[in-house]
Image (cartoon, rainbow, N blue to C red; front, top):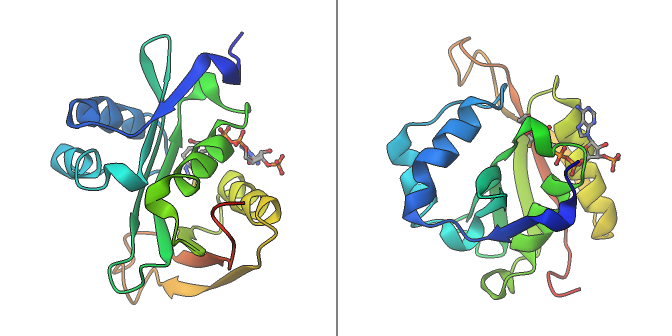
Length: 167
Ligand SMILES: CC(C)(COP(=O)(O)OP(=O)(O)OC[C@H]1O[C@@H](n2cnc3c(N)ncnc32)[C@H](O)[C@@H]1OP(=O)(O)O)[C@@H](O)C(=O)NCCC(=O)NCCS
């Protein structure tokens, strides 16, 4: 039986890139990125990303970055938890882990996008807003036809904040 206490969180390193690639591959409906993209997430974006390890295996990953023109806003790109580690609160714990880092001391808002048909993702970010005592707003952003040429479901923009990353 898995237990959250058996799972260690840390910033990713370049050597995690291919394990991240495989984890995302096993976490539909997430979009696959190139392994090169995952390597960049594990290096240039390591301060705002996290990996979770259980018994030596990579079971969780969040990629994120600070929006370049808005240094108070963390954008969460992808959240992936391996099936054997789901339902333990790991995704919530990984989000909290990133927000609590010294690197995120000036972060007051979190943004992400969610497709309408992903209840787990909606629940995850609503729970985060509640835990941070912050507002939760959603609005249209990336449209299936206008922006994805009909190839991908629309992505709704979610914005959480303001919050104090030190509390
Ligand atoms: C979404 C995902 C990251 C959740 O990981 P997790 O570690 O099991 O999530 P947590 O245990 O932290 O749960 C967070 C919240 O989501 C809810 N949740 C988790 N899985 C759910 C599901 N399948 N359906 C509905 N709600 C779900 C939990 O109940 C919890 O909400 P609550 O506190 O109101 O009960 C994981 O299921 C996953 O990797 N899915 C495939 C990839 C994906 O869809 N990623 C997008 C997420 S942004």
